[in-house]
Image (cartoon, protein in one colour):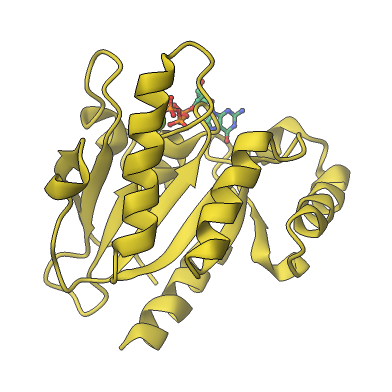
Length: 200
Ligand SMILES: Nc1nc2c(ncn2[C@@H]2O[C@H](COP(=O)(O)OP(=O)(O)OP(=O)(O)O)[C@@H](O)[C@H]2O)c(=O)[nH]1
Ligand SMILES: [Mg+2]
């Protein structure tokens, strides 16, 4: 699959603002700083797209991007709010998890979550909670292990294996990427191609 065009659609701070559409949705989830925005920019081949949607302050949104407008492989790419901030109030945390849970439980057109985790570390408690939301709601997901450039090449496979076993997944469900070295995108795109084809 190729990404031919991509544009920012809108941000939703509340479940009632989420987009109602028949297009399939592919969401990107992960803790803050794991590399979601960088990954989205790498995926769409535009170094600035995800950043343009970033609002100042602490507002955390579900951000929607329209990919391949007018093409048969058209879909919405959905940037889910990052979790795991230490510095925010409990009330704010509750609001994010509420938004996230509502989205995961109710979005009928969610066909896949790309679940980003840092390749260098074992998943955190928050990652485990995210995994549980997806599991409980039957949301299909693929793990994307970010920042692969930070490891020697010889360790990449081992770390993917460790992360796969943590989530009780087959190894083929953990894809290593580096948005800064621009590696790993082919495998992600072919996964997305399969998912979109199966959705027809
Ligand atoms: N070395 C390396 N650094 C990366 C990579 N991807 C992201 N980073 C860095 O990690 C930091 C966080 O990246 P972002 O893409 O902003 O992460 P995010 O998940 O969108 O963060 P929030 O929006 O705060 O939730 C930045 O300093 C990036 O430059 C990567 O593949 N390799
Ligand atoms: Mg971001």
